[in-house]
Structure formats: structure tokens, C-alpha cells
Amino acid sequence: MKKIIFILFFIIIPIGSFLYAQNNGIIEGKIVDKKSGQPIPGAVVKVMGTEIGAIANSKGEYRIKNLPTGIYTLQFSTIGFEILTEANISVTNARPTIINEEMIETVIQGKEIQVTSSYFNKNVENSPSTQSLNSQDIRRAPGVQEDVIRATQLLPGVGISSAGRNDLVVRGGAPFENLFIVDNIEVPNINHFGSQGSTGGPLSLINIDFIKNVEFSSGAFAANYGDKTSSVTKITLRNGNDAMFGGQANLSATGFGLNFEGPISSKGSYWFSARRSYLDFIFKLAELAFIPQYWDFAEKVNYKIDENNTLDFLTIGALDNVQLDNSSSSDLYSNSRVAIPNLKQYFSGLTWKHFYKEGYSNLTLGETFSLFNTFQNDSLGVRVFNNDSKEAETSLKYDYFWQLSKTSNLSFGSQLKYATSLKYNITIPGNLRTNFAGQFEPLNIDTSYHALKSGTYITFSQDIERFSYTIGGRFDYYNFINKKLYFSPRASINYQISELTNLGLS
Image 1: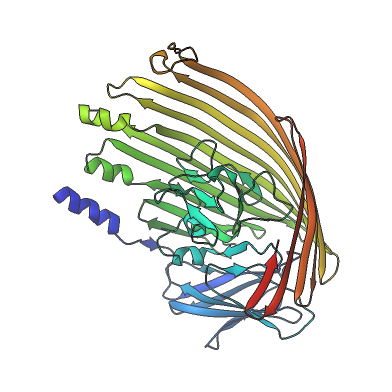
Image 2: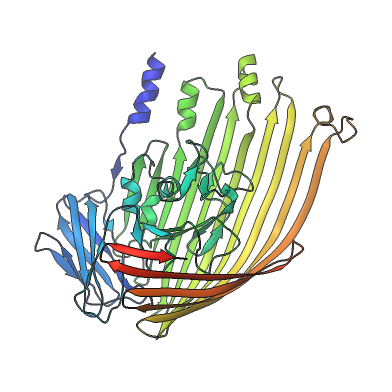
């Protein structure tokens, strides 16, 4: 009974954090043009219901200090852009609240749009099935435990295959049909203990403290995305604090960790995060035979070369391990009923962003790596299945955005992905497997492959008062299948019936 009470104490213990030694809170961020990505100097940020506010500097950055802790609404305005209102912003004295905004240029002055704090924020330039979330939306979402994938499970058209896993089932599709992109890097799986060949797992390895924005498309997504058929989850991570150094220690329902961030001279910033689960301590106290443990690490560095060029480097890694307690026959039997997943994975990328007078371009060199060791023993502790696999891929991606006018833009790009290692070593003993003749025969697979994928796309978008549309197409090439080249046409339209109602088709 004492052990149970001790375990429950750890499970319900509140999240704790410590950071900057301040009595009041801070809101800070950066304001940019949604289409061009250029900063908007002089934009006015006002805390609604107060006389407090700030003006963005030449870099589009603003900072509001000495705010009492509480919930606030911010209004962003400047000449030539639609007014934005962001509600339900939580301010604490633990750390600055980061609110970055992308403003939409308009030829109609004084038009105001409301950015609501629900799960259904729309980006009208994407397909009608696209929803947007920020880190505060994820924190407030009920029952998601600050997990970005669990937050997307609350969106329309999304189902789950199991309550304890992050396997997305989008409009009837399978979990392996979902695409995940983190800072322009295509990632095979962003979960701890991820399923090989799929995109699911028990919990996400993305730290929401550093999430800037999440765009989720549940179908008919834009031409710059390919290779998957169900959904696209695009996660953009924020930059570090370029004004001051800070750190945070936190304790959650599943683990504990440390975050650090700060400036790099006057031209950049960085952040670093390390987290570890404590479920292994709880499972041991509960005398459970199956003891999972995970670590994850993340780092992002951004550096401004000059006014038109920036470099961003990101790396995220995870170590997932399961310890077995086979000290009794009942433990052996319990552990024989599950396959034991051990996984080491990381992904990293370097992005060069160049700003032009009427647009910008991104060039990203990325790498993903996954090392699987999955095995299963029988009730006597004898190995009956073993899978040692390695999957590694290097990619090069180029995207160009060209703003033709205030109401139209053109984007195009290409991507090349080379699987440098697809190595699989799988064994099953002969006394557990029979061939077509009914004879016992072991399974031994020891093979290695290389593969090449590429894609290219073009998209044109235009806004005409209440009406907007996007048309485009994409070619995909994969040398590992018989029909190597595919073409995918893409189109979407949107009509704003009223301030609260849109009609979309894609």
C-alpha cells in the first residue's frame, strides 16, 4: 500500500519550473510578413485592456516587460497589414512568453481578423483541411499531456488506433501514410519507441517549449508535400532568446529535463534541451517486469550572416531502451507476451535562408538515422525473434517563394533523398516457423539496400477579395519500384461567405 501511495504521489506531482528571477512576466517575439518572411519594423503590439504595449524594432522584434502574471490578449497592427488579435496568452514569471506573428498584407486598411485560441485556426492560403496550432494551444488542449501528436488527434478527420499511442488514423488511412516535417526536415517518426515502418509511438520526442507553430493538413495538401497520402504535420521550432541567457528545469507526468537558451554575439541565438523519463523508477517500485526508459536531446542554432542570409542548424536525438526483470517465472511469462523495442534515432539539418526583394528561398541539407533492436523471448527466456535494422537517409531540399504582387505568388522547388543504408537482419528459429511444405525452417534475413527518391513541384496562388485559389502539380520519382515516375495535380479554392464562415474545396 505504501508503494502505491508513493507511486501516485509521483504521478500527480505538479509540473515545476524555475527560470529568470523576476516578479513579473515578459512577452516577446518577432513579427514578419506572412508571404515574404521579411520582418515588419514599426508594428504596434498592444496589450488589450491596458495602456501597455511595444513597437517592433528594425528586426521586427518586440518585448513587453513587467506584466503581472495572468491571461492576456495582444493586438498587432501596422499600416498596410490586417490587424491580428491573439487571445488567451498565458504569462508567468517563470520564463518569457514567446509570441511570434505573421501578418498578412492587405490593400484594405482597418480590416481586422480574429486569431482564436481554439483548435481550428485556419490558414486560408493552404487547403481547407489545414489547421494551425501554437505551443499555447497544445498546453491548453485537454488530456494531451503537452504532446504535439496527441494535440493533432483532437482535430477534425483524425482518429486513433489505441488510447495509449500516437498512431494517427486520418480519414481512414494507415499510420504509415502520415508525413512529418520538422524545420524543413522530413522525419520518419517523431515518437519515442516508434514503430518501425510506421509513424506512431507512445509519446512524442518534440519539446513543446520550443514549438513556434504546427500546421496539420488532413488531406489534399499543397504540391510541395509528397510521398504520403493521409496527412502532413509541419512543425516549426522557434529560435532561442537572442537578448538574454536563461534556463529552465521542469518535471512533467512522464519525465524531467533541462532547457537552456541565449544569444550568440549579436547575430544569433541557440537553445538546448535534454529530457529523461522517470517511469523506470516508478515501474521498479511497482515491481513490474517491463521497465521502459528514454532520453531525448535537442539543439537549435540560428545565425544571421547579413541582412539577406541566415543559417539554422537543428539536431534532435532519442535513446529508447527497455530493461527486463526476469527474476521469476511469472516475470518471464509476462515479458514473453511482448516484443521488446530498443531504438536509437536522430535527425538533423542545416538550412540556408536567403531573402530577395520579392521573396525568399530555403536550401536544407538533412539527415535521418534510426537503429532498431527488437526482440522477443519465450517463457523460458529463449530468444524466438530478433530484428537488428538500420535506416539512414540524406536529403537535399530547395524551395523558392516569389511574391508576384500583393494578391498572387508563385512557389516551386525540388527535393532529393538518398537512403544511404537500409539494412535488415531478422531471425526466427526453425522450431517456430514452417515453409509451404509444412517443414520447420528458420528465417534468416540479412540484406542491405540503397534507394533514391526525388520530387519537384510548382504552385500558383491568388487572392481576389473574398475568393482565393491555389493550383499546382508535383512529379515524384522512386527508383525502387516498377513505375518510377508519378504526377500529382493539386488544386484548392476558398470563398469567404462572411467574417465567420468560409467555404473551401480541394
